[in-house]
Length: 256
Image (cartoon, rainbow, N blue to C red; front, top):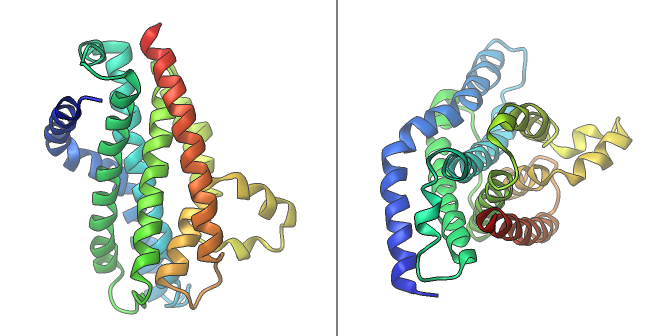
């Protein structure tokens, strides 16, 4: 790999990301922040939900914001560059293996996903007001979950961006991201599905479950959650599988 070329491409994507990051962030965070305001502020202050729900909700909001940002930051530019502008063709001529261009896209997505997580924590905290009880006594676990969740988002974005055509973008959000969010234990812990045993087992194929439960184990261990060992292990498997699949799809798309 030509490291200078790799860093130049990453720098170019960083400049583009800086210009588009605020609109992307608004688009990604709008729905989670509305949910935070209604259920984390209105419903709790009105007494319809216990005040403790704020603390339960925030880790899921962090996870979904990071995952959505990472997916969109990688998938949408890839769909545009492959299908419309054809900008990807110039970069495919760079003096390095095709796969390293995909790795650069993933790294750029990881950075944007982590930035989204850093933004959503204080934003959601401010919207919810007092009563949010987070614990940072396990900073290493939190950092590892955040890194793996952002890698999950970026590799999923690579896979989807090289698989979904421009006419299928609507289906992507309707059939993939929608169910992924609502059955990803974003707004409730995995243990809440114990009265639906079949559904509780089926949702385990959703990688977002492990991101949400991982953040709960690191930030709100007083609530039910999957163990951090399980979440870290399963997220590692998903990250590796999506990375390999994404690289294969990227190479196939690039040479056709």
